[in-house]
Each structure stands twice: as C-alpha cells, then as structure tokens.
Image 1 (spheres, rainbow, N blue to C red):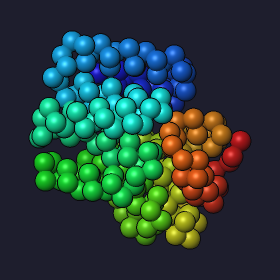
Image 2 (spheres, rainbow, N blue to C red; image 1 turned 90 degrees about the vertical axis):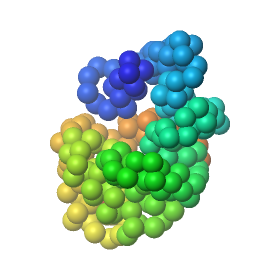
Image 3 (cartoon, rainbow, N blue to C red; image 1 turned 30 degrees about the vertical axis):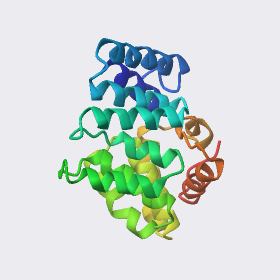
Length: 208
C-alpha cells in the first residue's frame, strides 16, 4: 500500500510529489520489498507490475501481472488491463478485462475507465464513451477519467461535451498542459500516445 500511495501521488496532482521521479523510485523500493517479504502474495506482484509500467518496463510489468494471476487464479488487478493498453495491446486488454467480469461482476470505476481507453485506442469511439462517462461520474475528482472522456467525446464530434470534460480537468489541475502530463502517459508506441493527445487537443486542452 505504501508503493501504491507513492505511484498515486506521482500520477495525480495531489501534493508536491506529483511527477517527481524520486516518488516513483520510492514506490519501486516498497514494491520490491513486499515481494521479498512474501513472494507468494499476488497483490505484491501486481503492485510491482504497476510501478514497472510507469517506469516503462512493459515486458517485466506484464510478467508480474501474469505471475500474480498464476499464484491465485481468482485474483485480478484491473491495472493489468491498462498495462496492456500502454504496451500497445488494447484488444488483449479488453479480453482480460472482460474475462475478469466472471471473477468480479461488480464494475468498478477503474476497470470501466481502462476498458473505455482500450476501446478508444482501437478507434471504437462511440463504444468508448459509455464506460468512460460512468468512470468519470463515479469518480468526479479522478482527473484521468475526465481526460480520457474528453478525448473520446472529441473524436466522436461531441465538442461541447468534450470541452465540459476539459473544464473538469482544469478544475482538478488548473495548470494542466498535455506536455506536462504526458510523462505519465506511459505508451510504448509514440503513435499511440499521439492518438490520445490528438483527442485532448480537439477537446481544447493546451499542448504547453
């Protein structure tokens, strides 16, 4: 949980640790320690995978998620879905997230958001809007949900709705720019990142 907290403060503008590499390095230390303390704990491996993802170690992150699942077939971390999206495998991400519904039928907000982003990356924009809208509604102060929804709305031509979501992003982070935030958009393929940034620009969010 210490590792998860440090990743959260790296990703979201909650305090002075936002975007600080030292915070992400600290998260890695805690996650490694958790695995050392109990190598059979799937939650520890999943959290290590989460850190590795934002350190852009994609193969290692996917391997840790797979190890977590092998340790307990009934365990699932929705971050596995986002990891696959960032690694350039959105179709596989949707498969993983849908398969998880059999283990956990309750649609939590994060899983909805990750599924919506995967659909966006596949250019299935109309399909991406409902789960992203539900994610943003359930977690109104979760900036990334509003970001993804703004991009999806923009790509479907719903520019008024896109700008409303962009305003929500600025409410949460008044100084938001794409250039500043993109450090946390851990896409393996630059063209995938540009695909998302294109939607954000269409929604009216500033590049710099």
